[in-house]
Image 1 (cartoon, rainbow, N blue to C red):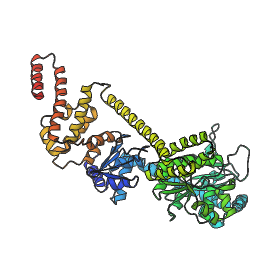
Image 2 (cartoon, rainbow, N blue to C red):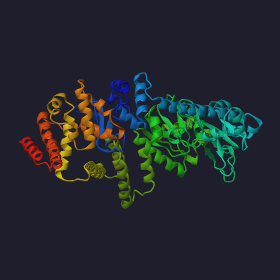
Image 3 (cartoon, one colour):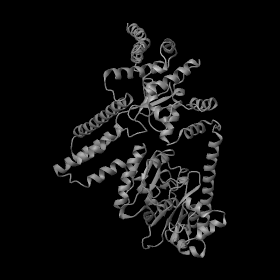
Length: 594
């Protein structure tokens, strides 16, 4: 509910200056259908049938597949993984609206504490980065500097990426940071030190390693990666910072702070830090890498803010190709046009560019095949297409891939290519693919029906009878119609919010009544802004579901009779011990049915 009138005014201003169609169009292609827009839902794995609806008139969205819905604020909350206040601020900044501070004193104090803690951690990491960098050019860092030189890095590149060296000592960093006013506990919280369990002492996390600072999009040092220079017993090749208050692996990319400024129009996605650094040194300033973890949907969303194309440049070994498979699926799911670069001779990108040169590497990028072509090629290698049985198995596998392609034109191109390759008719392959699409679509529809049935049973206390369903639908229709002033005038005097039987329906009725009685024009998005994210989907469904009612007054009257009948029945049940009261209720019930 509202925090204050002023705060609601601020939220209303943000919504008024945010066009929901423009906002959602940044994430997914919208197609106008009548007075609305439709799309494949950008909030869940919606691959076949557009279930996502956007109303420009009401400034609301709803997905009939996953149930998500609400205002522009609710969309950004789910799409960018933000809480309510973060989403409001995000949209306010996009619209150039000054952000007031409506928090209570305790909330402001807590936020200030977190802000100061983050600020100190950023400063701590920056100080550690300077320490590592200075060590690289000291006598103790000679081996590390020689290692980087052997890997082909120039002094300018080393400086640009802030590379450094962590001394072969248990406490060199701790001792240095203490002189700067930081405690061991703070260093441990920042992932720079480790606490021994047995005696509550601390030691440096990174020892005798080449150090790679990891920066966020704003240029803050948020973490480190450390690489050993030669094999050691039981020592991991790479050691990365743990997650902290300022560092979330899944939500950051190495060198994204630099690559975001590239004019290339696409990103080169790598596995390793050295791959990225070598490419930047050679002029490929659009290279990035995931951070010691598999590529994530959050990382795909970061890329999409700046470009809608990506080339996967993973290692040629089996592990690298499996990683490319996973990353490719995630990128395509984010509607990023994805290609895969194949490096011959089993080399990784760093080795290839240092031995073959940037021109040859540029040719590999230019000749990168689409992710679908890459997948088809991998499957093709497993079959002998001269053998009829194997050819049929090949077609079965390929049909599964093609059935998952959202774009019909793109799918058609691949079908034609496969038809030529296998000497099987285009029509036969198309039929097999479309059969899989129909099965998948029907499966999704059955699941949606099952989910809706389960949700209904939960909302009605498990009742499955037709009267319960009839009442539930009547309440939904009535709430939709009550948003119109004329309907509200005719119904509000004889039907009260407390007569709605379902909890959310009752709360929604209270909000609608309050807003209609205020005398101002009811804005659907201001109604939804009164509800928590968990309920916004159902509320948006009710408000957006017009059902194409021909005579709204008649529909409202019919819905009123169903709701009122249930209300009077409930009242009659409570008055069974009062004969006079019971008779009066029954007379009114009969009158309303006529």
